[in-house]
Length: 399
Image 1 (cartoon, rainbow, N blue to C red):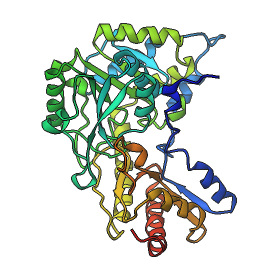
Image 2 (cartoon, rainbow, N blue to C red; image 1 turned 90 degrees about the horizontal axis):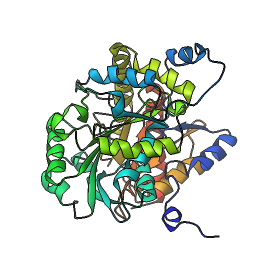
Image 3 (cartoon, helix red, strand yellow; image 1 turned 90 degrees about the vertical axis):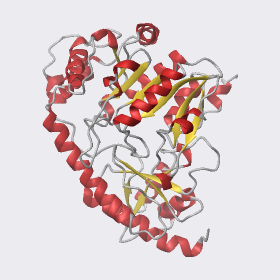
Image 4 (cartoon, rainbow, N blue to C red; image 1 turned 30 degrees about the vertical axis):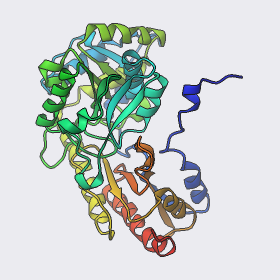
């Protein structure tokens, strides 16, 4: 039977494809420090389940396609902290940030269109964009420059007559790169100049370190007609399984199109929306505590990684990932070695090979991403196992 060409050409997740080897190691009795997937071990705030338990309806009915007003209103109040003024009409609740992204690309792309994204980028962008019939026009960044891309000539070199949007993940996944207000203003000016959409993926908004301030693209008034924001409870509140996100825009034409997709899938889960509304009403002190915890984890992981001879690694100032270039030719082969042939005191580690985060062939083959999702002690041990593994691997595999 015929299968869609565009779907056939989409690759499986490069983050998840090594899971079976980790499971095999665990069956052998080896403890695996899983630094490959952004699933935090931080407890979900108790108010989430308390709000669900307090729901007294006898029927779990459909919510409105655009979302429950209880959650929309909680998000409106939350965004005021970032000088972003929204109405219910500006917010469509989605099944996680993933559905928000998928809807956005479906609304702005026709077959053959492209979006400009700095590489390395969140791997699922490739899936959502391809499913919408589009392509990625990459801005190539490097470990040596700290993955910086807020440069006029660099961004404009990736724009052509088929470009429809600039996509910014801020703070970045996988790089941890955080854009300054000046960077955001520059990117906004480019979007205006070339009449492009600006899609701001801000699911890591509060994950900013070293005293830097969390800023939303939504605070830039002059780009409101072309701005699309995606949001999610997954990382911010350690509620990945709730699958609640949002698509946000003040452009009524865009929101009208997105609502067609929202109505097509009927609605988001009713109970999870009630729980998420409680999360968005948590006080600012919650984010301060969360930020301190993840900054501590980042410091522990970066400190240990920095002990690896020949590594290229900049301390990230946002999100909860660390990218590093290792002194190996093929990090996928190194990862297989860690999972199949290496252990230290009955323990090993897994990370995400970075090749899948790039569009340009050949890039990322010597880079890794680790997710700071374990406590500082375990994260440091995981990074140590990467170093100890390299000490055994490198003599057998010269570059």
